[in-house]
Amino acid sequence: MPKTKHDTFTMLEYERQYAAEGKKYIAGVDEVGRGPLAGPVVVACVIMPLGDEDIIQGVNDSKKVSEKNREILFEKIMQKAIACKIEWADEKVIDEINILQATKRCMQRAVDGISISPDIVLIDAVGIDCKYPTQSIIKGDAKSYSIACASIVAKVTRDRYMAKMDEVYPQYGFASNKGYGSAKHIEALKSVGACPIHRRSFIKNFVGQDNE
Image 1: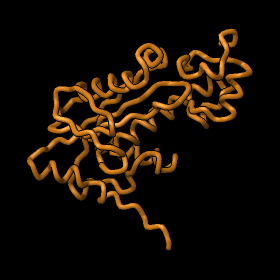
Image 2 (image 1 turned 30 degrees about the horizontal axis):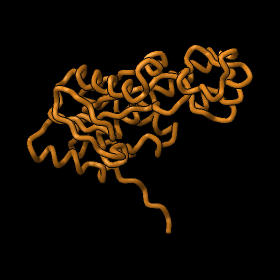
Image 3 (image 1 turned 90 degrees about the horizontal axis):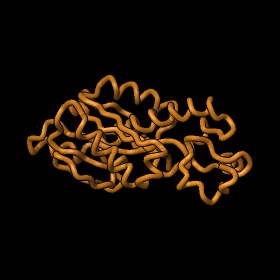
């Protein structure tokens, strides 16, 4: 049986539910980069227009969209977004307070810092304390249009940064692995050691103290 084409309109259940309750500004929040050995964790909070004519077809969980299409969708999302706020925490913060707390801090700052106050905030999996009502949705980036838009914005923002870091530290293959633990990346860690953007708390198994 041929694979059916993804229909972005199927991801509007939560948005339509809240719109029916009179909520106008529905924010989606997602993070990218909790798992890599290097680089920041990046969070995006977006408020998208939700009229049928405004829905961007092709939006989906960023992991299910090709890099080329993510770049195209990123530009469309940024053009259409009512409001968008991006926050990130670098490797030093992650090592200091751990990746979950760094992620939550970024989410709180992104929500609190967005230029339009949301009526409800939909968050992928994580629960946070903020001044607005929130709903945490497991696998939200595959279920909510707003969260999926945030997922794409965060992913493209982080990937572009890691591509720049590849120019600074070319031995690790950051342009292709984005800081995740690929075989090439781990081999470079073992042979040449860590660079400044590595998360020390993540690479203990690959780098000895004399190789940092």
